[in-house]
Image 1: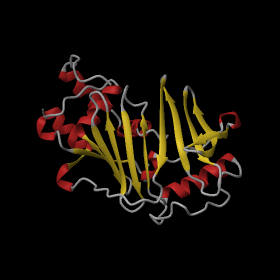
Image 2: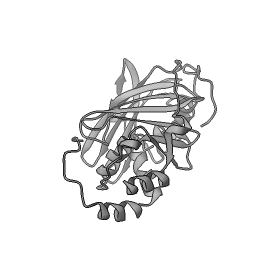
Image 3: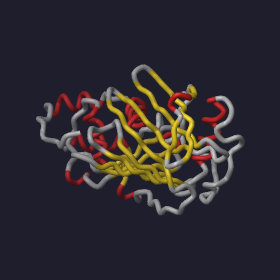
Length: 252
């Protein structure tokens, strides 16, 4: 997305639009933004090589469930592009005990997102960019520039990477990822789609995700399964609930 160089709508209109924006609608958009159709079954952080029951064998629903179980309980890293912002990239670290960290970089959209125990923490400038993508324009005051906006979706943090329901195998798109055979499983809804490439073996791991949203395509690869990462959730003094953040922005 381009930098903030376009005129800002009249603030009274902004207030009316944003104050009427339903929280759940915002959270649904956050899920799309996070690329996983998207945020815990407790697991061992060193369990990257633990075999799944049947790996990529079985029905699409059975395989998706096994992959989701393995990914929830295994630390990993992912990187790639995103459909959320033009020209942007995302890098993610996940640890079952520590939570999730996602770094977004690109023209005009630097920022980070964290998630732990179902609570999302989105850096304020990134949150503003996300709203702008939905036609909701806000200006983040300097005093809030280092704040993380918190939201609770009622879902676990695996919503950012789990395979959505309703997928079907697509044998004609089976391929190799990092030299490993991978089965393609596609989930579609209207013009949007996610194609998950699942390691064809006993490990039942997600290796790549190709997404399409509103004509934008993206590709994310997953690696470093079972490795140790350090993820630090923003401290309380740097966080602000969505309702309070909205009030502070409206105050100017």
